[in-house]
Image (cartoon, rainbow, N blue to C red):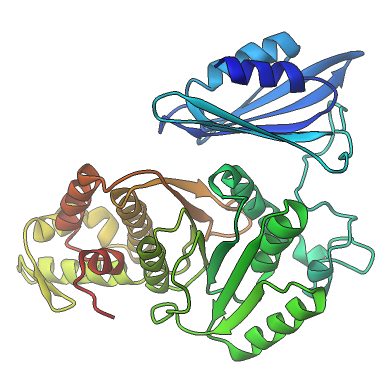
Length: 411
């Protein structure tokens, strides 16, 4: 930890803009930490925000206290990113505990941080700064103000960029990176990714947006050309049949409907993508399969036929055990959606991805608020496969992602 300590001694001062500690080694407890300098009663302190899955904690420490606290956090975290007025720095900690510190001087000094204690929450894209694609997509006015009816969309864009900010240490900055965005739609977030990664962070990035709507593709292509985004391409095509790339470093699938999400995730796994970001949309498949289970229970059957495959085992029992959920349409629909995403996350784990299920946007803004973030870390996980097998057998379901990974879906 000596290298990290030296870094902290150098940057815990007024020139620090922000610091983010992420990649927790534990599934419970703290999952993320943010640090920023604050001025309080004439003294420079460092505000440390630490987050569990459900809670946030705050404390203000002087430089020495902050350094000791951060060093203790790094025992349980894998990465740290810091920005100062004059440099950027990243720390990656291997499984064996070896820390790699990389520091880069800025070619031009950044604006100092706002040290006021009660400043408003920072956004990656700030209101008041005109961003052409947000203006042309109707999110901003000509002078950079957020259109009142697009406030939730603006928050969504910034929240999405925060998720990308956390995984920047996983992306190679020394070569061109390929990002595939399946089901890009009007492409608010596609343009935001390109703007953030290429314009703000300086990555050599190539992004391909794929969607079925020809008029949307034409409109987005025209905007990309207008902004001079040479490596942002939009294509009309179906997710399941897309074969326009030999590899992808990051795969994004936002609100791809029903099993389209599964085909996108399967493509990402097949490419061995380093990062996967997925916000599922409507999920009907398991709901229908669970309906089959309920009908089987009512008819006294134990085997249920799904997609040409006979599923046996505990399926009949599960319908009985889960009657308080399965007998009420709204509850069954929500349970099926959660089961779908839980199995998707576990399948990604089984293929060597460290997977998180995160809240994308507060539930008050949209009910479709789950984001799966997966980072490739290792080899296949047999324990996860066994957990999947038991869950699917109990529920009597066979999700599309599992069938593709197992090779029984040849689409």
